[in-house]
Amino acid sequence: MACQEIEEEFIVTEKANHSVLWYNDIGISVYLTLINEWKGDWMSVETLKWSSLPYTEEQIADEAARLHSRLNVIGWSPIECALIAPLTFEINQLKQKLNAVVLAHSYQTPDIIYGIADHVGDSLGLSQEAASTSADVVVFCGVKFMAETAKILSPQKTVLLPDDRAGCSLAASITAEDVRALKRRYPGVLVVCYVNTYADVKAESDACCTSANALAVVDDMPGDRVIFLPDALMAANLAPLTKKEIISWHGTCVVHENFGSAELEAFRGQYPDAKVLAHTECVPEVVAQADMAGSTSGMERYIAEHDEAKTFMLVTECGMTDKLKVQFPDRDFIGTCVLCPFMKKIELRNVLSAMKDPDVSQVIELPEDVIRRGRVALDRMLSVGRAERVK
Ligand code: SF4
Image 1 (tube, rainbow, N blue to C red):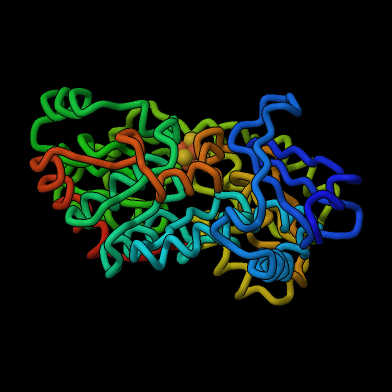
Image 2: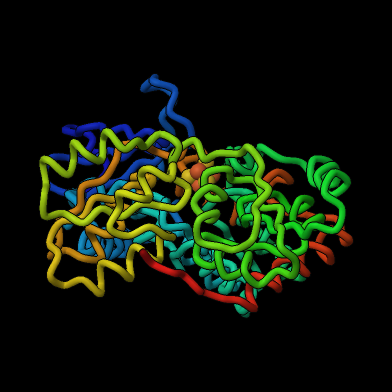
């Protein structure tokens, strides 16, 4: 269909990430106009003809259909899938061209998880992928400490983080100098850092862990006492499970610290048969009331192993809910509305820009000595592997 015919009747849909699709009322695979930056002014729209785009109309229609086959379970319409299809198509093409792999955390949005990700998982699973991948480029759809972890594990690879504002309240709560001060204060006590720390903090630590093996790593450390940082709530959840005395730090996750036992009790009253799954970054009262407490991958395993349960409440970042709805379409999920503002900095548009023409802020670089010393702590985490004691 000629562009002129289509322009006679169109609807404009605007998405939060400023990508705009114009389509007529016939359907999705007719005509797309992308603009680089939506300025709220029709005159700013740069009209691109199909011939000038790096894909054909048919390719985008196929890509939209592929996306819709995954995302319709969570209510994405064909139009919404067509809206993102040019981006996912181009990113997937670039992956082949660059020999790149896209690693996405489970808290990412469904367009990333089901549109472009090669591997989706928790911090441990993604670290294992980063250590073993044969790709030349690792595109991290997660937060900065995860991308840094990938760089430590695969220093010869190019590691891209699409938006360097993708931080973490836990990682930001502690510096390398803070760790050195703790070691001076508690001489001889070994340091276990949660993976949610920046590379220089890992370099000061004796071992690293994730929520999937925190207890096993702590138990594995020599001595009666362990400095566990930076998550005060995870430390409080570990304390009754280990014989070690835990010296903790005061960091918290801005997502998980929001959940309280009162909400859980109210939920239990409303859905008495539902299973409550809580992350171990929550307060101990919430963890105590949950049917299962652990990592996001532990939650997935629990759901897969509990066929008898129909409804689950997820006490974690709300991105998990959409992911699991697609994964387990025969179950019902009640999620929370708490978003991680850092995880949501990653969007298809900045993934594409990082892969096409990365600026310095999108490329992870670390000093050699930080990589070398951080690797020691991470190797300990990887050697313990997944050792989750699911409640
Ligand atoms: S959910 Fe919490 S722990 Fe995870 S990245 Fe966001 S702030 Fe950090």
